[in-house]
Length: 215
Ligand SMILES: NC(=O)c1ccc[n+]([C@@H]2O[C@H](COP(=O)([O-])OP(=O)(O)OC[C@H]3O[C@@H](n4cnc5c(N)ncnc54)[C@H](OP(=O)(O)O)[C@@H]3O)[C@@H](O)[C@H]2O)c1
Image 1: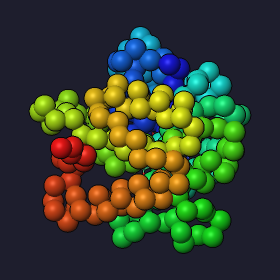
Image 2 (image 1 turned 135 degrees about the horizontal axis):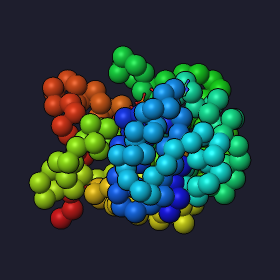
Image 3 (image 1 turned 180 degrees about the vertical axis):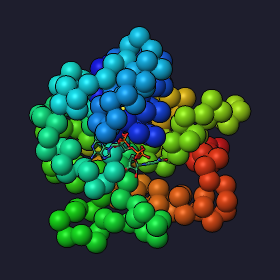
Image 4 (image 1 turned 180 degrees about the horizontal axis):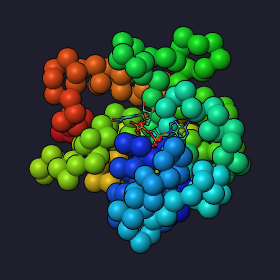
């Protein structure tokens, strides 16, 4: 797949490298440091490149949105048309001091960040994924916890987009768990907040993975 990374920091850089190594065409974008983008593309290998966000979006069928919440609206308004694109978002509404969620407080924000993205890009196919996954784990060789694969819960309203997202989750070595339609992002984003709070309180941050156990 052709994947545009918008926000090439801890999450975008880590996921983009894994997808490039899995053979996808990855374009890294949106960093204040062009050298960082160049380095990421070099590390990721032959199927990776870098460029301005509008180029990454125009050339890709899947977009990973991995920016801070405060940059979200500006980014969506400046990257060009997102119509028909699969947008995977891991953007979190977690407050910087981890005390809770930003969403639900500001009136212009809807009930989840993912729904807000869908509102801003109504013809895109938004899928929420990777919100309950620490970048430190994504970037580590031991992200599979021995023989155990952590789960990545994803949700969205477009079934084809969800299939694509699930494949990309699996390509990173995680188990993809379908959590339902996009409205579930409200709960997943809240769960992500609880997960961060728990990991800090328990002093287990960041060496944690969430697993849906079956019996
Ligand atoms: N880190 C995690 O474990 C984790 C887990 C789940 C969800 N999330 C969420 O995922 C999103 C990304 O998190 P992250 O940890 O990857 O953040 P990050 O490392 O700060 O990455 C954000 C990226 O956006 C870029 N950026 C910010 N302001 C910019 C500007 N004005 N112009 C150009 N580029 C700009 C940064 O550029 P620079 O390269 O110049 O810094 C960076 O590449 C956030 O919403 C976060 O809450 C994070």
